[in-house]
Amino acid sequence: GMMLSHSLDDISIALGGALVGKNCGDLTMMVNEETEERKQLMEAEQEMASRDQDMQLRADTLNKIESHVLEMRSAKHSKHASLLPTTLDEHLDELDSWVFSEEADKASKDDVIVKLQSAEQKTKDLCTEYFEAIQKEIEEKEREMEEEAKKAAIERAGQADEEEDDHDNRRLPKKRRMEIVMKNKNEANELFGDGNYKFAAARYAKALSHCAKFIDLSPDDIKEVSALKLTLNLNLALAYLKLEKPEQALRVSNDAVEIDQNSTKALYRRASVYYEKKNWDKAFEDANKAAGLAPEDKAVKKLLDRVEAQQKRQKAKEKKIAKKMAAGMFG
Image (cartoon, rainbow, N blue to C red; front, side, top):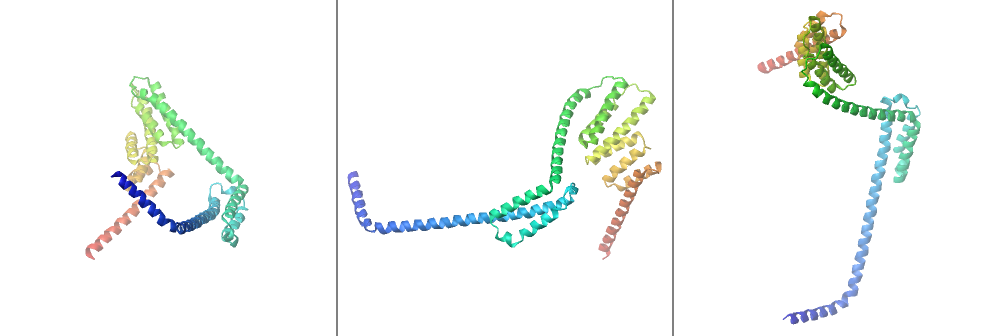
């Protein structure tokens, strides 16, 4: 059976081949023509694609020239504007008009790229001092960040020491305990001055926790420690305000007022916290009392004015709402 089908296949292939052979030349020609046409089409497509790409790149580069002009114009309102030369305007005007000129319309992609490079180079040459100042500022920022990182590392190391220190319920003599409090307070002040409010707050809190550990104090010592606790609470409240944590700020302001109800500073601080919390009436109460205690204090006066202005606005708003509601009810 196998043999038969095999020989049959061979015969049919041979016959088919004989029939096709006649048309084979025509077919090859057709195939060749089609291949050629397809090749030309692909070449045309590739050329169009690369033309599109060139046009895109050309447009992008023109945009870059325009944004370079804009950027340098806005540099005139920047921190280092005084270092920009008067000749810069002329250069930027020239670039501006070039972008919209016939010359630019006719310029090839490569021409436009060369124009951008020479424009940027000229700007650099004209504004050397300006760019130097910017560079200096960048380096300064990087240095500051390195310093911060170093400080944070020291902080971490410090916190490890402090951990041991914290379980410290040893009965230290007053002088030694006071040294620990002052060390934390001074470090906190320094951190606060550097704008490092989070670490400053931690240090103030630390100092306060040590204030609670004094033992065997004379009446004078008690007065001294109270005054210190008052200052620490005020500073901590301010650090919390800077960290936008009004709840914590209020808690320690309350502690401060509790230590001395007639402390202008404590009342002023708590009034500031209430102001942040938009509690105008409580803010008025504290600021008004502080103003009574220290009529000469400009900061207190200023805060009181601001609080009163807010109270007025609030009252006006409430009146308006009441009017609207009344109109709604009877309208």
